[in-house]
Length: 334
Image 1 (cartoon, rainbow, N blue to C red):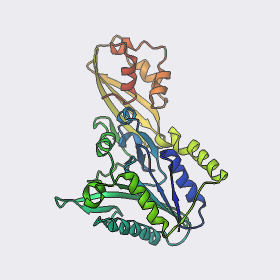
Image 2: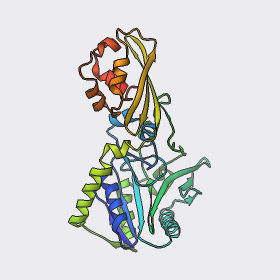
Image 3: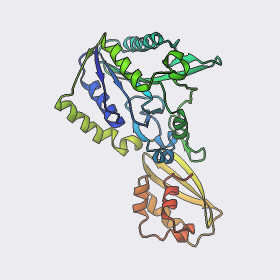
Image 4: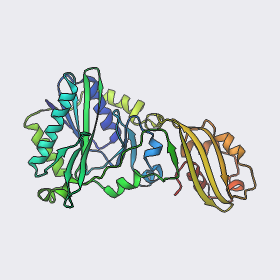
């Protein structure tokens, strides 16, 4: 088995490299990587229903859709991600072997962990509760397959909760909603690991894997070019990260000087198909013109700002604070 240890922390780059490996490796490969703070969305999920985009923007947390299904997960440098990429063979058997390989290593570090029925890796905490320390996902194309997951070693769980919990009134989605599992950091569960940083754990894991795997070094120019193309087409592209959303309805309410305004939007992909307004407001203008201008517009701050250029928004909302209005219409308001 080959081993690749990724030094980039850019989630778009790392997911693009994973897909590039999926396309081309000729031997079983394990890919070890970490991301800067980011939310990684499952392939079939509604991004708008899974992430509080306003909180993510405030905290400078990226949002990227991955190639595999499953739920939304939060990554930061306290997470250690692993990918097993298999070019051939019986995928289910190889994925099971990869999972056992991870469990065996964690057990050797003093973690009495085990797999549950969803191929998650779990432990029992001091209160006797079963908690998840790793989630996994997979996909297959003909005989090729990816089985990957992340170990919560010392993850910022407060940031995770903040960005993976959108406002309840914002969205009613027909997409696949993540199952919120009870999770915990490995570092806090295992006394022998409490003095170890995530950096050291990552390096030690790589050293252990290198004992049984062939370490692969630099990428070729062709590999770098393919990664750049995948970032442009997928992982760095808003249409991929947000635009695969199924139809959803959005409701956002905000108190303005004219009264409470509620924005109702039907969103498909990343486009506003239709929208309307309601509330107890006493505005000077009918919201019909704003609704008409927003139809067919991308559901993003910049696109909404451009679509409403030239409209005197103060006449509708009673405030000259354009940023507050645009944040509200883009779903970013508190």
